[in-house]
Image (cartoon, rainbow, N blue to C red; front, side, top):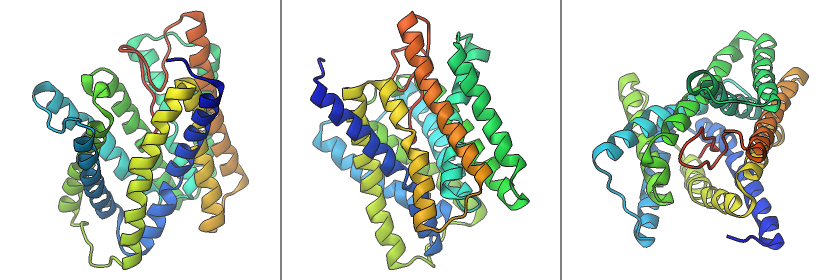
Length: 318
């Protein structure tokens, strides 16, 4: 498809808007939690609403919902152990960390994916990618070394969410799941979160709506179509018109947005070292994307947000 200059400019705008919308996630979660809905319950309720909306959109666009055989097995593994677990870990970290710090720590996943690709799949990497990997690891250590014990749990949860999301990406790239239509994919991703959240909620007796308020439900009803529908569609258009590497670069607006909104709306205090760590992780994401662009130009195997059939994949958190 030939893309005009005007379409490229629109694509940039779409990608930035998508990242900015995704960056509001911790603000919504923190505010909803403060109004009576805990993390596990939030994940389950939000995912149920998303399932309903995506099922409607799938039907309207004549996209299938039911999966069977190996595709069904892969979907359950990827979306429960990958996306569902990631949602619980990341959203739990918001209780301990400033919004931007939690989101930035989660964004170690591009470097984790790269590390696994190098160690297990013998992918060759260039200097930019290696520097990005070292930079992201140094940033995590910097944040951990300068954080109080009360925040250590949040750091572990946020980094663990990045690792579980890296598993999700790597597994997804090696199955036919990545070729599912968008709303079918979104439906099953939400279904995985429902299963993971329900299992955790039942086992820990944490599924509880007794403290929910009108405000918390209202925010959730705003959050779901805004992020699970609008932001997903905007990112699709961003990749279509700007390319995957540019979209990956622009997705760094997500932790930046979280940091700014956390300071402005939630009055969060973020120390200088934590800001340095957040900035280092954002820079590492940019370097990974630039490194992917360079390997494409040199004809060397690389990985990027929307890869061909083989390779290592990086996608933004939905």
